[in-house]
Length: 91
Image 1 (cartoon, rainbow, N blue to C red):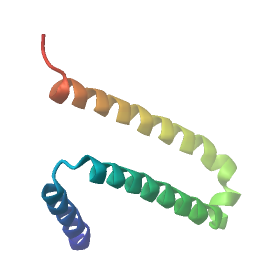
Image 2 (image 1 turned 180 degrees about the vertical axis):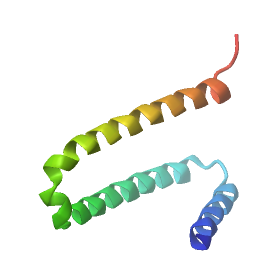
Image 3 (image 1 turned 45 degrees about the horizontal axis):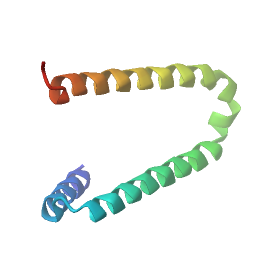
Image 4 (image 1 turned 60 degrees about the vertical axis):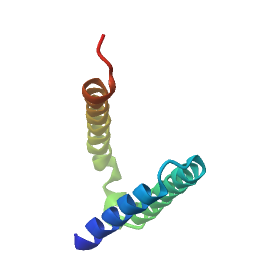
């Protein structure tokens, strides 16, 4: 946990040091997207090599669908609430 927090604090420090430089921010965005895609790919490999998951995929499927839809709905609600309370200007 210390390593995770240290990396996060280091990233915040570098972000403050870099400031508002559009070219660097664009590169960081592209690198972030690439890292997320790579992690999803590696997660897929991990799932594909797990015999227990593959053999029970038919029974896990419905549970996974329900959990996924719940996660999406929860994310949308939280995003809406965050926008409403922090970013929307009052009339």
